[in-house]
Length: 376
Ligand code: 5AD
Ligand code: FES
Image (cartoon, rainbow, N blue to C red; front, top):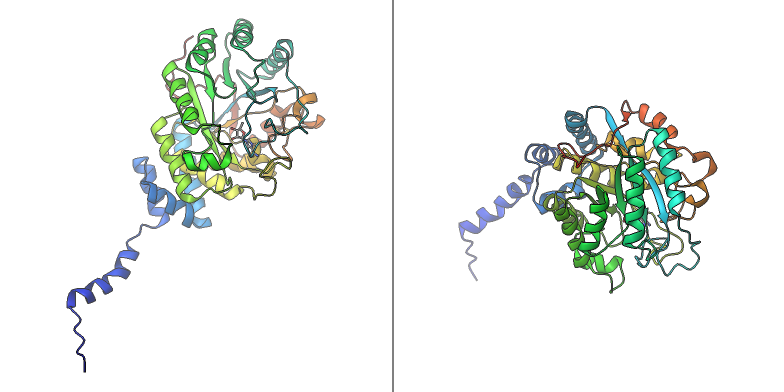
């Protein structure tokens, strides 16, 4: 009969295994570690994102509020969003204003329209105007430089933010020289393969990331960001987003749930959830305590009190819509977008009430990033 000989070290290894498993840090320990060191490894972020419980999330939000109040008190910064054009040369699979959507009802605002929005916004207390639009060739450098100079001369105490997509560095420079202060360009995903699943092959992840570095080098206050719950996204990919943001060191990060749009290739995909989005907001607050973090319209779209929940999870910025009511429905990046009807003409009043319900309050200032030495 064959004699089985089991070496003792094997036994030891066998019995060690459960001990190793127990050594995985629990979620609350990881959250405390993130607060303390402001970073985690990719694996730790991914574990936390994949495995946290509702109780862990509440713990994260409590810590995020403490950290947020340390730097910003109870203040919430306001940005007036002016959606200047829904013409777009890009064809992102998730976006309702992608160029292949020929059911989109296209519009663009004139300089006069935009100045009227700023005028109204100024009276309402806005001191930042965000001009956002698709990649529309109509808005040449000359058109934008004229517009920026005009806004700056009429409202010298206001900041101008642009969110107009990718451009060559020298073109970003011209807009900066004309007076633009900030630029928002979401990276969408830090992973090139995932980017290729969300965009047609001719759209380049490398070019997008390069744009962000260019904007930083020029001296803009930079905002980036991503959607939570896009098709093919995994906890590991979200962990990569966290690490990319840490490396880029932007002043602002805009995140919101992916919400399917009926006339896009992703019409039948599942959208992101409130829970996932709030958890990512909390993580961002702990990783970068001084970050400007908007509680987004997309969050308010999938949950009636989503924006209030965002503020309670660590966000500190809101971006009420200042676009003319007549065009708001046309800027439909995703289905059921809120603030597009006549009743929402003055979102700032609505948001003021909503924010008050959270114990925070709107601050009427430019709301620059802490420590930012602006050019004025
Ligand atoms: N759901 C949620 N957000 C979207 N965006 C575009 N399409 C959608 C969608 N279907 C976001 C992108 C873009 C920003 C202007 O809007 O992240 O960068
Ligand atoms: Fe726009 Fe409430 S914030 S209607």
